[in-house]
Image 1 (cartoon, helix red, strand yellow):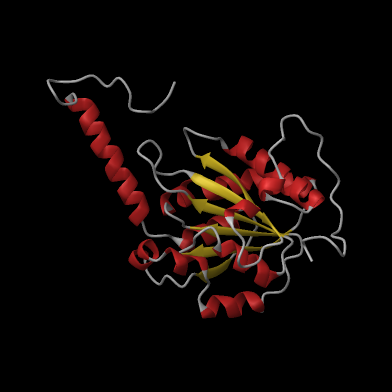
Image 2: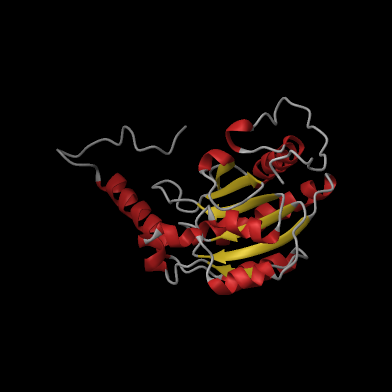
Length: 247
């Protein structure tokens, strides 16, 4: 019932050959996922297949080694990207960021298929996607700066999660209301473990759409918003008031 490595047996004082080889292979897959090249052109093409377009941006981490060694640089846009987004026009309700994170492999494998299920659910709730940014060298908090520059009420960041020995291609979705620089993880929700042996596309899309709808209705994400999608009727979405944290 679990991919955890328990009761693997032994050969003398060591592991049997097969579990040892399987461990070595999974470790290599995780390392490969971390160091994979982010194919932004493939992501842009995938968005085009869905009738969507993307803005190509980058963090201040200029290459993969810098990205891994300097997490802080992955949380800030480079100057060219700041200028691009500042002139892109306002995103209105929702902006989406697709970033490589710690597993570009996860983004290549799952981001477009997840959006294929998510976009119709958002459209059914009359939630318009203002802009989609494809971000190289991205950490989660890069979505805060992107959302702020685009003037979005909310940002959803699809990011490759840190690979594990059972899932080198796990995708996460991070949702933040009123995005702005300086927020912390306490201000956002996360739908994680999206991959072939984890959370399926349909269920993940349903949870994300529910959280987006509720966040816009309540004006809150993070510790103030719990996933109650299985037993709660969604609230109507209202425009932000003068006292709303969206302002």
